[in-house]
Length: 204
Image (cartoon, rainbow, N blue to C red; front, side):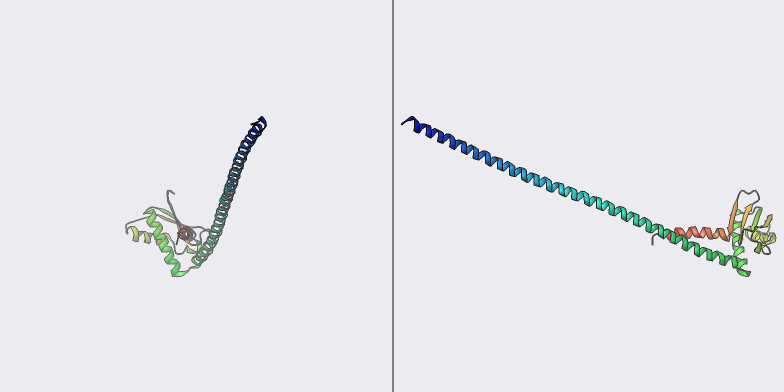
């Protein structure tokens, strides 16, 4: 065998081995590239999902914020409407009370006076009244009520004074000015407004 055929055989083996190694390297590189491509696609998809979720969370937060604003605005309008309704209702009731006359007004004053005297007890009082009630609410009239409440032996010093700002009802202040019981129509209606407001605020 000559040297030339041996050289050709060696070259062929070397080239074949190199080709095999090159093919393996190329295949590995392709596989790595494919893996990297899939990884990149998965990462991109994950980022898209993340951005979509962030956008959804932001949208949900904005929706909740808008809902809260709408609810607050609705409640504000409801409160304003409630106050307007209460004001109109109580203004009408107060005007009717102011216009009451005769036995109806006398019975009203009697009930208000009894309530005030029961609250303050058998002590000397200044009783302030409306000008329209000066002929009815007198010291003698109050003494009779006190006798009904505390006994005939109760001798209480009552001072009756007309107050131009009072249009109905009465206000009693103890002589030492330590206690006062405001039972004027205007005061009673204010109490009633508070009670009605609390009642309206309760869930149905």
